[in-house]
Length: 437
Image (cartoon, rainbow, N blue to C red):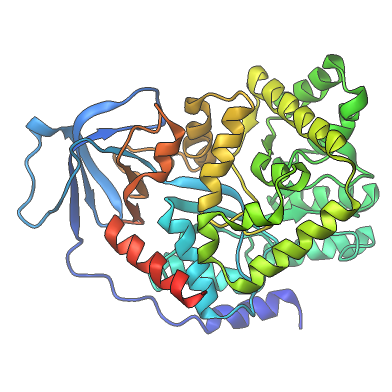
């Protein structure tokens, strides 16, 4: 059975669309400070009215008159910003079970992550995406890739072409490029993707190299893959090489997804006991924690000495600063859940790592919201607090523009028009933690 016929069979089992309520609910954030993110600055003392799953009106609190049926949320002293976009996230394997799947989706939403660009996709993720869109499951909006196009999966150009055609016919949102592809197979995949109008993104196979991937139109290069080597490595990198690859990246309008926090775990010196003490690990299964400790031990056992690892980290920060200074597009992604990177919670850690590399708070928040929408060509759909946008919103107790840590100081989250106040979020998180004791 082909991937297309499997997809059609899976979609046929999804059931009918739930009936829409006869009257769309109205929610009003009253006297709140709005951070639009499609422009600089803060709009003070505003009322934002959501009708159904869309932002209906925004205006100064003194000039707004609320409908009697509106649910009022007191925004005094609080800040309302768009929901976050995780640009390198993973969804549970199809066999993970409904409880784990729903918990992972909730971890994203609980942290204000209302959009996830997935990687390492599967047919079951298409059904997951559809169920979330219909309101049957609580979760972020998903952009689902097909299964990774690796050297093993696509050993020849002919197989690469067939896989792209099947993934496009099955309805996947984009292609994930992975390691091991020959240059000929990569070029065939690219040509097929362009013919079918499919975006391709991900890693850079060694046989392809950064420059050819950029010239080919790869939409994003994840984890700064191959940039360290292209720059000459930690011992031989120089400003000229870095400037060349940065200029090529900007010219290609490609996004880089640096995953700095993850690489700090890979290459840093923090041990497993210290990493295991992170409070958010309460919300993942014990088997994940055990597996992560084993992975870290294996990585450290075969890794270069700490001096070399830290030099590589320093070079990654240097490259990221150069990309930022040149005005290249940078996305916020964490590769969660992977090696102590817990879905949702990892976004704040990644933002802090990007700030430590030299990016401004405004640049980081814009990358996680407005620029994420621009990547998908969906600026009129999400990524900003504006009339007509989907009601994916994050209400905070402090101004994130003043301190990135305030991104983690939630007062509540709205996803697709559904309001989740902080007490409800905390109660659900506590239930998850108790289940994983």
